[in-house]
Every structure is written in C-alpha cells, then in structure tokens.
Image 1 (cartoon, rainbow, N blue to C red):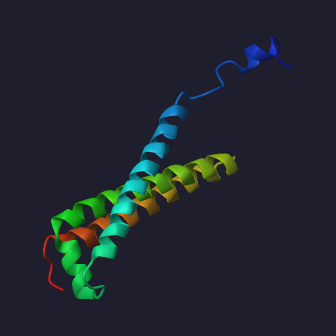
Image 2 (cartoon, rainbow, N blue to C red):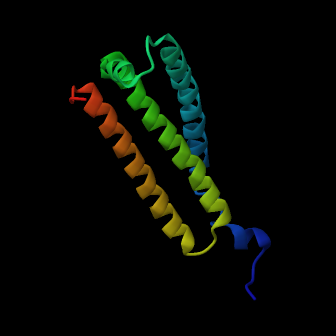
Length: 127
C-alpha cells in the first residue's frame, strides 16, 4: 500500500491539457460542415441537370471543386475526432492503439480517394 494522501496519489495522472483543443476542433469542423453542407445543398438544388454529364460539368468548375474538397477534408476530420473519442472511451487496453491506427489509416484512405476523384474531375480528366 502506497503512502500519502489521495490527492498525492492522483497528482500527475490528470488531464493531458489537450481536451480544450480537441473540443474546439470538433466545434469548428461542425460549423464548417454546416456551412459547406448548406452550400452543397443549394448548389445541387440550382444545378441544371442531374445526369452524369451535368454533375461532371458542375464539379469541373473551380467554384465547385474547391468547396467540395474543403467539405471532404472537414467532414472526415470531424469524423476522425468523434471516432477518436469513442475509441478512447471504450477501448482500455492495447486494442486502443490498434483501433486508432486503423481509424487513421481508414480516414487517410477515404480522404485521399475523395480528393483524387475531385481533382481528377476538376483538372479535366476525360469522361
């Protein structure tokens, strides 16, 4: 049995002083998701046609490609932050590290795929 007071035993095992930053990132990405999703819904509603050629022409425009890329980055970063909290709350052994690595790899793969597709269309790849 260790000596000292309860406060002495707890000291040094508290906050990592990163919770506020994580909280702000979640709120900022939620706000940007709200704005960018509103832009997407309005843009889709104003689109002339919804066939492949119409959507391709819309996304080939830089005014659509840049906000779409920002939306992808914001949504996936927000998802990563939320899933990180779930993993930290419910994984309590070495599987936490495996789950975090798997989450990061999944998010990077999804973002890379989505950005590649947006850039391919925006930079004029043939249909």
